[in-house]
Image (tube, rainbow, N blue to C red; front, side):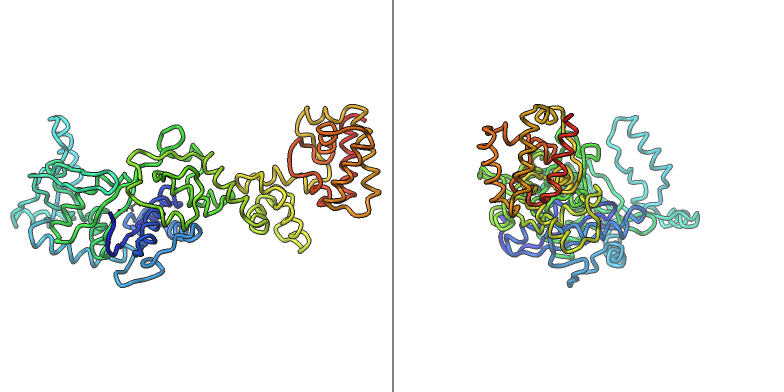
Length: 489
Ligand code: GLU
């Protein structure tokens, strides 16, 4: 469907932390740009002066780069179609506004808020469409002069003749049409001289030669206004594709209540960027493939708008966790050590500044626990056994495994054999446990469970033969003594 040289754009409003839904739009654009050797532009729609912040801009840029979504033109990168912040483009917008007013497509409107409110009320009472009455469309020079004298600051309205329809073929949703009569003359420049989104976005897309506008479904209803502007300005219209909403698991709009919503939050929780990219790609897009793990290269190759669904996507955090756990498994212990470190610092297991030995130990711990993690913040739960001196039984069932005399005997003998061991390494540990079983005629659960609980307090976890060499002989014996005491021996 997409042929020729394509130019895409991602145009976030920097009014808060980078939302996961924005990241999905950015990703779809990025994938298309990569797949078709196109250009991706990133620019900021910052005309909302009250809500736009530098922190948000930084957060969006950092998050995009962290996800690996680089851009070819725009903010920070530059290009020949800048500036790439709307607030720096006011002169450009003004030029086109003058042209629209001159050609009769737009006019100054002096209506006050009270007058407009009165109009709205009246249409409501009459049950008619609350579109602008057109009062200022053909003001006489005298009326105009009067308003100016009163100090009224005009807005600029775009005139939409009510006949006919706006039709377009949405790349995701198919044929769409809107009655022009439902649009009404709308404001394109506010009384403070700042253009509204629907107007600025058209000029930006047109002047930046954007060929495909792929964005969130919430902008579908804005598209007819944008198309009538394209027509009046004589610009070539881009193709539009509106990607469906992302809903929470309970099928309501994704919100803070249901968990993290910003990319930064997921980053802080210890998710891997490539796992998030993989997961986001599957929010609305699917393939015939059964499995859900896609490398970025595979995504670039296989992604297409034809397979993006019209129905809302559901943000299933369990699926994200599954995908993330797969990427964690494949990652090196060194990388996972970096990811779990802040969480272990927070849990008080390690300090921010570590010696080389401590860092080496951390990498070994990461190697042992990474298969059990869905995301980094879960690390303390699994890593505690490598850092504490005194273990705690995770539950009554665990405590129970050490209460019998046989269990006590097993642990006591284990301690002796461990202290006799020449070198504590996984192979020797394996042999030790095997011989211990033979010596005391116990095997299976009877053998492993009391040992595991005495050393870790838990009934499941990494291999015992790896844990003991890591925490060391002395610590193991200390823990075993402490565990027996706790079990009432
Ligand atoms: N600034 C808009 C937003 O953040 C994007 C609009 C567009 O892509 O046209 O939702």
